[in-house]
Amino acid sequence: MKNFINLKDIPAADLRKILNDAKKRKNKRKKLSTLEVDKDQPLKGKLLIQMYEKQSSRTRLSFHIAINQLGAGSITIKASELHLGKGEESLVDTAKILSTYGDGFLLRTDSDKKIEDFSKNLTIPIVNLLSPSSHPCQVLSDIFTVEEIKKKSISKLNICWIGDCNNVLNSLIAASVKFKFNLNIGCPKNYRPPKFVMDWVKKNKRKINIFNDPKKAVKNADVVFSDKVVSINDKGNKAKKIKDFKNYRINQNLMKVTRPQSIFLHCLPRGNEVSEDVFLGKQSRVWQQALNRVHVQKGILLYIFNKLR
Image 1 (tube, rainbow, N blue to C red):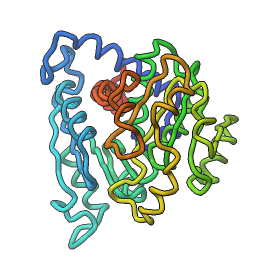
Image 2: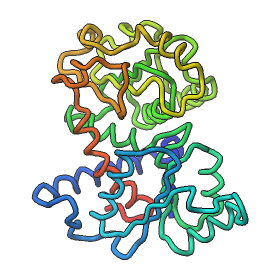
Image 3: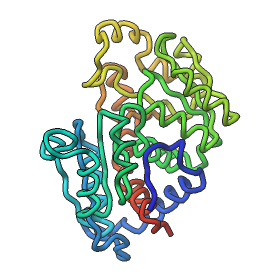
């Protein structure tokens, strides 16, 4: 049994195995419809329990499809439908119940501590579908997409992030250490990654370049990543944040500074951080990026059950 919570805690070799498996399975599904099960049905008879405390479109849909294609069953519950540490049942007891009925637990939450507490008390594997500090499923899938398009290892590419320091960037930073790729970050001074994140990068003998000037950040980039600057659950001063990021909008002028054949990726949902002509333009691969969530998440599920080929 293995958990999939943060990329920084998973060996690089295992992450590569997940990507390799995803590539093989995607290639074998070219003539299959969405809910046709993979021929080997590697997770036949297993039940995956999903719980969402935050809104979800791509993660919810892609994991539903991934679970079905692997031959497993799933049930999706809302946090409000469980006692979950409230009322008469402790989180510890909830974890024991989940372990009794299910074979794996998938959690999208607004609390890093909740994922940690569940991981300590479950006797089944847990997958982090998103937490305040990490979005590992998204970023591992993004690496798959980059390598699929560029037809080379991401370690040979220049990657750039323009935007806020959030859970997606945290996972991208972890990925840059695991996969050893160059990462530039473009953001205002007050929105840089926290010191403990940068200390972890340094401890692992890697370096990340941070620029206040977005043009310097994207120079010679092969891939430009972004995310919504103001998220639904942002508790800070949203008007100030929008103003602070005013000069960081990804538009055609900014993309001209990147390398020829560069691509734009966005985990969605989008906001004003990217212009319409870039988001819907020829450099954008956001729809391919979203679709690939299915294939990589199949690899993640096989990883937690020790079934990677």
